[in-house]
Length: 242
Image (cartoon, rainbow, N blue to C red):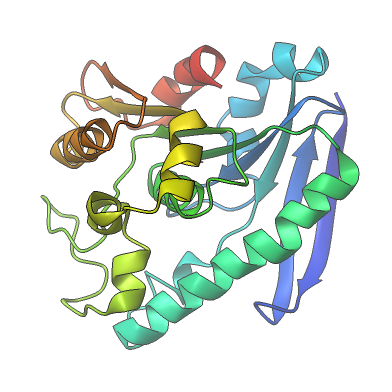
């Protein structure tokens, strides 16, 4: 299997960013890690191995990127307005630096946005905001509203709210989305949301699914038994849905 390590300076983030590439051809999978993960988490969790057959066959090429969670949503010393601004800079990094890099290496027309846990939030947010760039979304164990307080999971913006928060929260902006150009692209996207039936964000997933249904956007909301929020489950999900 082709495996590449890259470390590149990001003008958008003003820091070095690392990523791993797995595979030589096929649909490009943009992978966002969990809250505690980095660019190498997907490999360490055994997810790459779980997809090895598809990678070796040239059906998939993975791009496992680094994140800036400690500088954005989990930067507790920063004002929440600064946290969301750093998240926006990260999205700009993905859009203006990572995706062009992916396209320069692989001309395949399909890009799949994929993430685990908090990474599912990133995968879904960027796909819903920029549906012209993605053919498919695969989100495992996601939370699509970071302002919620559920169990031990707190509002990551401490009650702060502005337009930046609104337009980067799928559960908030999608119900009011009326632009036909975006809706038509979302309706053409293959959308798969997977969540455990005991996951604390099950209701949030169900609400998002209801919104998509009301908008006429085809999608799948797939429930697994138990919490299903760990590598053990994600390794089993990946070959089925990606």
